[in-house]
Length: 151
Ligand code: ZN
Image 1: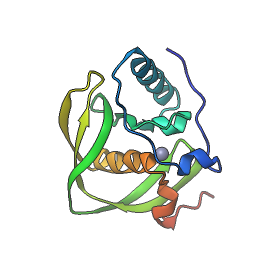
Image 2 (image 1 turned 135 degrees about the vertical axis):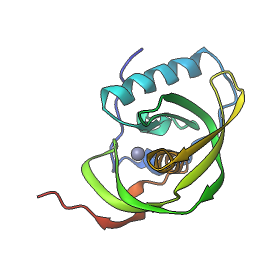
Image 3 (image 1 turned 90 degrees about the horizontal axis):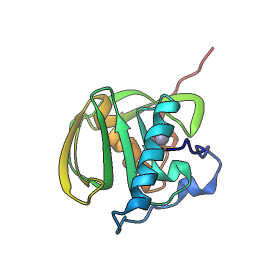
Image 4 (image 1 turned 120 degrees about the vertical axis):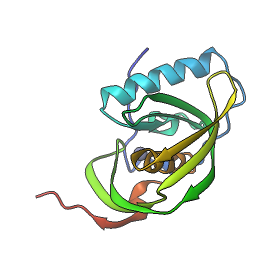
């Protein structure tokens, strides 16, 4: 495993749409292992492949209730809304208030290509929305309704 460089805001790759994963091979597993290590090293709760410069629909998440890998994730339903603070490893030293769904259900493949359904509430719902937005070139900064000012 290796820690990869995290792409920062201003890099045009963050605005690009990631492509579907077709091959569930050793190269994908290497990417996943590196993303996992990179996320934990940066104390993040989620990371999308585009944030390490790879335009593939791959995200890793750990909101404190276990590590998961989502490949080709799609939001299948949402419920309600939550307003809360959000930050991003690609936007260091900043956070903002955004509105996200309160509950998000996601369909995604695992590292072997098997489809699974995941349900996220609160932080995890926010994380699913945030990371899947990355795959479509969207940063949370485009959804901020109030910027947090640090003294
Ligand atoms: Zn992010």
